[in-house]
Image 1 (cartoon, one colour):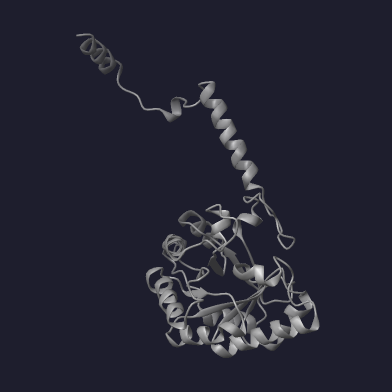
Image 2 (cartoon, one colour):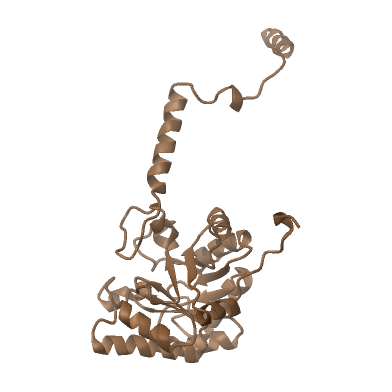
Length: 288
């Protein structure tokens, strides 16, 4: 059987639970477009997050707060068209689930049904447990997100590590337990001490995926633009940069500009031609 004819097995929630049980690390990365979805899925990523971070890295907003449901739906649809293997999580943007439980279930359903996401993600701990439970009862899988929650970072004193004091650490831990009990199938732990993240990972039965939370989590997630050096506004401490795609693209465009100006592009290999006699006939007719 050729590789092309082999069936591609979709990553299911049960697969992620099995990976935790077997202590196999889960890889997760963001993607926001059809080409990005193709790339990260082909690379073999386990989970793709269509994150509201697209507001900064794709749309140029100052933070994630302005992102709309319409924008999240369009980007989720683009990614799910590309992906065959990875589990795709769609982020619920700010104020799409904060007003009421009914609003949250409705908007989760849009991303799940119309966006074809495999699950949705929302930020918040104990205060969001009722909402998570309602979305779960509606048949929509929920990926939780605790610790630093970017949509409400202003209430947390800015983009700072959470859970460093005993009281804060207990709250983050209780957030994790509350979301698990509400039906969340996995948790993102963002910007919390590695010791706290390891303790949460040990105590909860569902997978934890860390971002700035140490190696003790069941998996790790990064923003694609950060790890390939495509977003230059700032680079968080927890990011490992694997490439400098920004500079590569600037150099490629600069080379193109030089080739155009020097008439080195397009070359013969990039051009289409006509038979010489046709050209001559055309010249004669145009002179009439």
